[in-house]
Image (cartoon, rainbow, N blue to C red; front, side):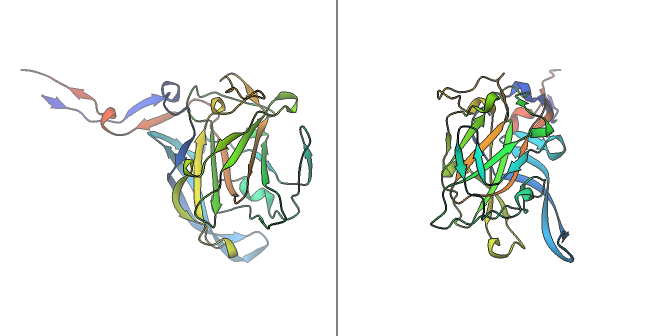
Length: 253
């Protein structure tokens, strides 16, 4: 008997177990010191994403695409009104450095904060191209070690909003990376989740079908400092690790 061990390459289309909100606790980053844009004589720590592992799915950061975060005053869609006057550096979240966070003031007089993401990949709409594999990856930080429950709504065509999907505190995975060189935010745990379009809800509270195109997402919560959002745009190849990836050949003599 001969045993041949190998990594098996499988399309994301074949993986159905990830069609749910999944914690992200395994990331690979390239860590380096980067000059501050406002003062190039000073530097800060950067955690540049290299890859993310969700369950048995290895996703290289080079396959991901970013969105456009909106953190501003005014109304959106069906009259939801927010006060963004205390939000700093709204563009900080739209890159692959998960140590570059949007710090927000959660004083007692401020309402729950919204994080609006549109133009995913630079387009008007995002469509599920990965079957039942995760479509979206979100990272955030909190100085309490626990992220309070948040809700995620789909922004649908004509600016209709889906019903809020509640994300519980224990849905978030700890990446093991703390916020560094960000003044009062130092030491905050960076946490992540992955989910699919089919986890989101339509205006009546039913799960979205996998063919539905969305314009973006609205994430609402209290102690949530965003650090990164990205989407998986198309089927990619990933490495399945573990016993199920062993090719075993039996040969009797």
